[in-house]
Amino acid sequence: MKIKSTRFGYLAKAHDAEVGERALPETLGEHEVLIHMQGQNLCTTDYQQWMGLREHQGYPMAGGHEGAGVVLEVGSLVDNVAPGDFIACGYDACGVCEACREGRTQECTSQHNAAMNKRTEDGYLGMFGFAQYRVVKDSTLYKMNPKLTPAEAGFLEPVATVVSGIHQLRLQPHETVVVVGAGTMGLANAQVARAFGGRVIVSELMEKKLQAAKDAGFETIDSGKEDVVERVKELTDGKMADCVILAVSNKVVLDQAVDLIKHLRGRILVFAAGYPAPHTDFDANLIHYRRIEIIGTFGANTCDFQEAAKLLNIGAVDVKPMCEPKQFDLDHLQEAYEAASTPGMYRVHVTIPE
Image 1 (cartoon, helix red, strand yellow):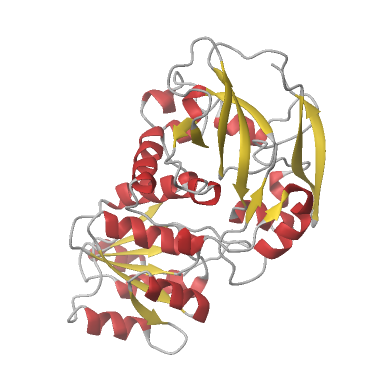
Image 2 (cartoon, rainbow, N blue to C red; image 1 turned 120 degrees about the horizontal axis):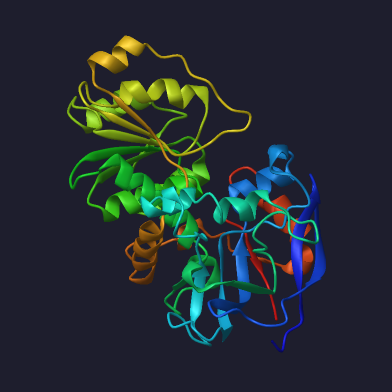
């Protein structure tokens, strides 16, 4: 390859984002692709580790998994992308382990998990999303509409995780969905649920996020001023929601979720994780007699990524409202983390020049 090294961003420790340089492979493998990462969004996973809330993830962490860029070179057997293509990145998977063979590629035991939990030869963890140049497998790349900005295309991974959750929820057209939380992933869940034909009601207490949900055309409940359960009862003529998506995680919303769903066969999707981990008290007999389903979701398989790419590329999901207007370049990564961790912020984007 003509490019021999790359600059990249990483977390040296909590509250300390730095930029380093490392060598790239001398040649591309048959199914490898060299890409220039044009930009990367700071996920909650990223900035919470910067805040010191996810110390279990380890350091130095070369994170970043919400990025987009342009293909520069391809290996001899690559035929799904070509130089010049605008792409976003998904998860790696081996294709042969038990999880992969059952279609659960997000649970691959040898590839994606290894990238997050095993160190490189030079001692780093993570997927190197904040690198100028990356060498990745062709199977991890998805073509994106060039009309999208890198920040918008970088939503491929989060939208894919939402698609995965919606599939597990078995959402049917015209069902009523209450999305608790109008942050980045709350709005993403709301948009995907609407694209799947659901009637979506969004509950939020922060004014900025409540307004974003209103601007996106959703029915909203100001949970800081209204009784959410009573308001859902009014909006549904007493029937309550078919399902609830928890896009925030705390004891209050966990306890409240059971009261928001219909009396029989309501479903609760626990989308968000919280740090420190929240706990809830519930009556197990209530779950039993009302046939309530509580569903956990995390990650996305290759089919979810493909569907997410379609939703973004045709504009069925519009992530512009979830992109903060102020962006940061790689040399100001520390400031980007500071901004992303500020309460009320949507996705903060880091631009990565060649």
